[in-house]
Length: 358
Ligand code: NAD
Ligand code: IPM
Ligand code: MN
Image 1 (cartoon, rainbow, N blue to C red):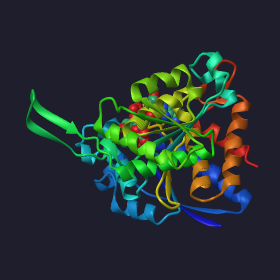
Image 2: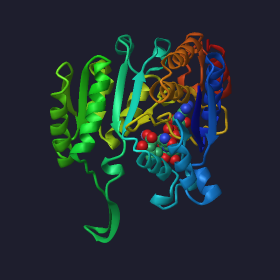
Image 3: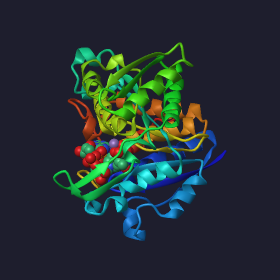
Image 4: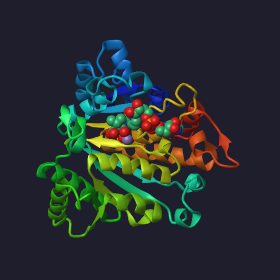
């Protein structure tokens, strides 16, 4: 079958990790008789440089008309002084909003071969880690009213607003419960309901949705405690459902439990099959252009794309198994390096994974 995939390499290490991921997908196409047609489009800093805008209309159009979108990362110090709505990161919010990608799945899985790379004590790591963070992606403080007023409490003031409506919480809660039904049937809803009105609404809606899933055990946790519990005893979590900003922060934290942020993929899903797939990490300006970035998060994001948007389950699994095989053969990029392992660069890691595809 033929699939149209919009690719957005973006900035920093984005193009490096996308390049390896395309090699993986091409090899999968070759083995299984699929044609992946890639259309590269601009977003982020590179789009600002070439078109004056972080998210050209053409990019949104191409993405809307594709079967799926694969994104590297956007942003970098070069564009950090631009006003908020002209920054590269605005492209991400624009795409998420325009494509209606309200459900962001961020699975944090510790591979057996990577136990050495986790910073947690070995007695905790021994029990394995397998958490799915379900992050609300088109609401909350990222999309709320923001602005400045000249005369604030103590001089000029800036504000950002957290707002959630019933429907927004309902649909992300439903996503979380559906996922939990296919996993260990446990959902932890993370909020700050002791302080925030939006969290109190969030909690009450999650409780209502839970009634449709009597087999799933639901508990609630404040976000500060959740940040601590993730490190104390990560096995207590199966599915974490949370708001846009809390999910952003907790998923970076969860990624490190699995060895590195360079390992964590994500799927951003809308109603229907369209999805955008990207590593949870950023453009890593500190290692960009040095062939040091770990491409695994992006390659695993492509596996999620095959599973969720293209219904190619078997092929997705083959990619995931190839990643595990390379790790079991002790090849490591710098971010997951430990004693006795073989250090490789981005391109070598990509080729090794391609070599394991069967
Ligand atoms: P970052 O994720 O880019 O980097 C944080 C640290 O993790 C750095 O030390 C980096 O070298 C390391 N790292 C990240 N990905 C790695 C990989 N694949 N392999 C090895 N090491 C990796 O976060 P940051 O430094 O806070 O942000 C840098 C820029 O990226 C900013 O402009 C930010 O806004 C942007 N950003 C974009 C996205 C995205 O496009 N989805 C996500 C996060 C941050
Ligand atoms: C992410 C990033 C983005 C976010 C930024 C770059 C807009 O950190 O995808 O996790 O906060 O959602
Ligand atoms: Mn983030």
